[in-house]
Length: 82
Image 1 (cartoon, rainbow, N blue to C red):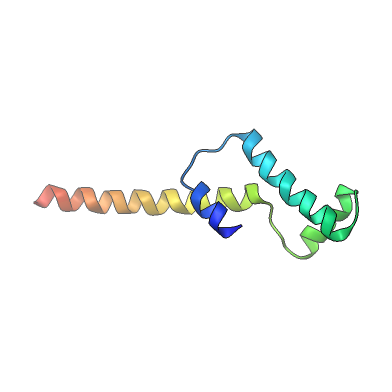
Image 2: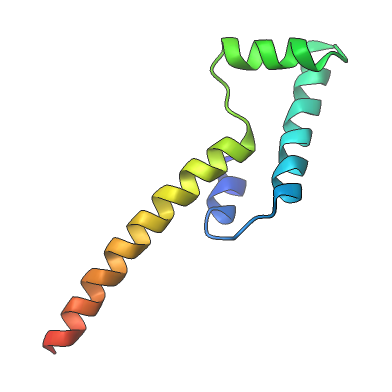
């Protein structure tokens, strides 16, 4: 999962793509917990503080964009003085 999120944090994602990632994670939990009830899955995820892929990806993308802007500004400032 971390490798997948690392590659996706730099890519713009549609809402349908994020929903597909969340669906895969929820299905994994359904099989793991041997249940078909999404409410049980969501309760277990909240109990164990497990964030869905869409939430993790949003947070990681925001951090990536902040680091990119800071890096790009420093690079532009160094180029000015050369």
